Length: 105
Image 1 (cartoon, one colour):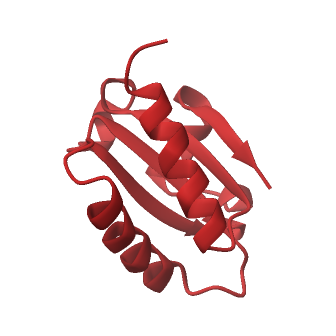
Image 2 (spheres, helix red, strand yellow; image 1 turned 30 degrees about the horizontal axis):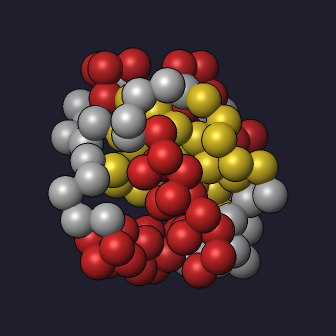
């Protein structure tokens, strides 16, 4: 494990405490070239259908910027239905195929 793993785990812990999270997948930038991600470590966060994913994402980004500025970690939020949707959003597809599930609620 590299030195950033505890920081990712710390981010996950903060996000899970602050938001209604179903799952979180870690998607490294180099594992998802097709997504053209800027951050080194990308958290693909799945929230319940009852949540407005775009609003939760904005709040998560704000919290990460306050708590973990410069960490190279970014969060992208999708509703639970994105996992079952065909075709899936590219970022969700890449997380499920090339990422690592790091939280299951």
